[in-house]
Image (tube, rainbow, N blue to C red; front, top):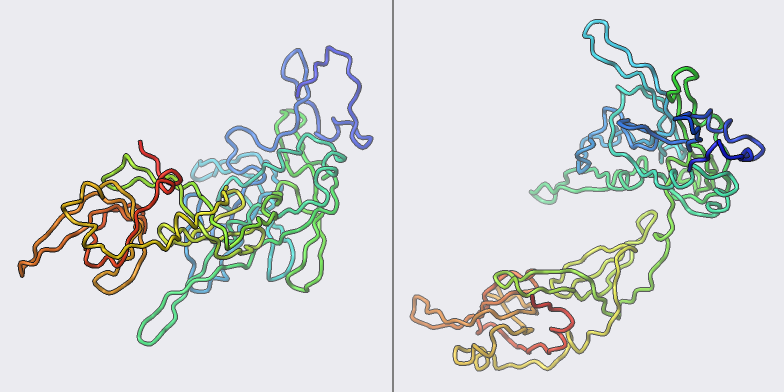
Length: 427
C-alpha cells in the first residue's frame, strides 16, 4: 500500500512506536516518496526466511524427497526452517577466485528426543535448500499491527511448516521370516513437530535492518513471535515457547471431523476412460467408509472403491456426496441362465450394455464385477470344443479389457438406466 507524501497524512503508530522505527527506515523510490511494507525476500534470493533446509548430511534434495533411509537411521539430521538471516558481504576465494556467499542462517526444528524447539546458526555453504516452505501465514500478517494479529490468531492451532516432510520420512530394514528376508518400513519421527495452540503474540524487535549507506537489507527475521502451548512428548506436561511466525502454518480445516457413516454410499469424482471404448467415461466411483485415521494433525478417511475394491485415502479437502445406491449396486435379482443369455444369437442385444456378473476364474477365485460388453465371440480349443467368451471392459480392473468365459459366469444382472445416468458419460 502506498501513501502519497504530498498529501497531509497523520503519523502512523503501532503500540506508541512510529512505523518507521519498526521497519528500520524508509525507502525512497522517486519524487513521490512512499513507504513500502516490509518484505521477506528479494528477487533471485535462493534461501529466504521461511525456507526449509537441511545440512549436507541429509539424504533429501530439492528434487527428490522420496528416499528410504536404512542402516542407523537416527543419524539422519532434521529438516529445518530458516527463521533469521544475516546478509553478509560476498567474498572471493584468494586461490580460485570463486565467489563465496557470506550469508548466515538461524534454523529452527523440533527435537522429539529432547522435547524442545532447537535453533542453530549455519553458513550458506553448510546447508542445502529442500523447498521454499509455506510462508502464506507469515505474508498474511506481515503488514498488520499487533492487535490485529492477536485478534485473528489467539486460540488457533498451528504447527511447523516442515511437518509434512518429517511425517513422510521412512526408515527401512530387513527381517527374516523363515528362509526369506522381508523388507519392512516405518516412519522416522525423531524431529516431528507438535501441534500447538496460540496463547500470545508479541513483536520481534529489529525484525528488519538496512545498510544506512546502500539501503540494502542486512538482516531479516519474523516480525511477530507466536507463543505456543503444546503437550510435551518427553514429560507429558504442557510446554510453552515463542516461535517465529515465519515457521508456522495454521491448522483449521484439518481439525474438522466429517460425519461420514459406514452405512452410507458416497459419490467420488474419478473419471475412467474405457479401453478401446474411450467415448464412454465412468465419471464417478461409489465409495464406502472403512476407517477414520488421525495422522498427527489431520484426519485421513479410508474408503473402499466399490468398482475396483481398492482402498483410497481422502482428506478434508476432498468433496463427497452422500447417496443411497443400494438399488443400483446391491440388488439380489441375479439371473442364472448365463449360457442362454450370453450367446452369439443375441449378442447384438448385449453389446454396449452394462452388467454385473458373479465370476469364478480358472483358479476358482470368486469375484463380483461390473462390465461393459464390447463383444461376444466363440473359440474352439484343441479338442474341438467350442467355448463362448465375453470381451468386456471391467471396472474391477479400472476399465481395462478382459475376457470372461461364459461357462464361468455363475450369475448376472443387467444394470438399470439409473446406473448409467448416475455413473456414465457418453462423449
